[in-house]
Amino acid sequence: MTSLIDRYVLGARVAPVVVVSLSLVLAISAWIPFSHWPMKLVGGTALLGIVGFVLAQLTRDAGKAIEGPLWASWGGAPSLRFFRHRDPSIPAGSKLAIHRRMVELAVVDHMPSAEDEDADPGQADSVYRTCSDWLRRKAMELKAKAPLRANEDETSTPREFRP
Image (cartoon, rainbow, N blue to C red):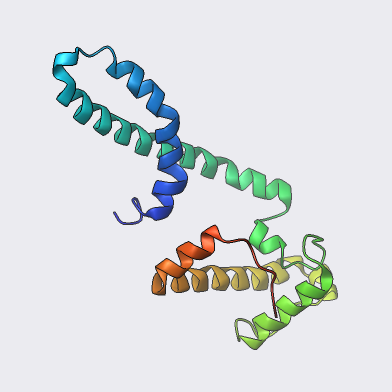
């Protein structure tokens, strides 16, 4: 239940839906006689909350449904692609520093070279997937240990990677 209602879900999914649907709820509540204003307040608030959660879940499900085809057309998940030597999104020097750091942290024994990646892309992607899964898990652990710091980091400007 806590994964259904957490700060991220409320801020990124429910709040936008509530803001957008607020005008609709206000318009509907205008049709209710004024003598029932306490019911308007309670009913409108409950309706707005329910509509917010339902629409947030529906849009999340729709996004998840197109995630697979999008990733396939992009050549894989973004977190996996960024590790590839052939992906130009991150400069080669920074990418090599990231690869070195993954080995230093003992996430993997070795990172594939550009030649290894060309020879066996599936094996290279398997190593990259291990690294991206580890990074994701580590970020969640850090967020759980220091949620206030994690929330502050979400609102700050991104920093450069420093190997």
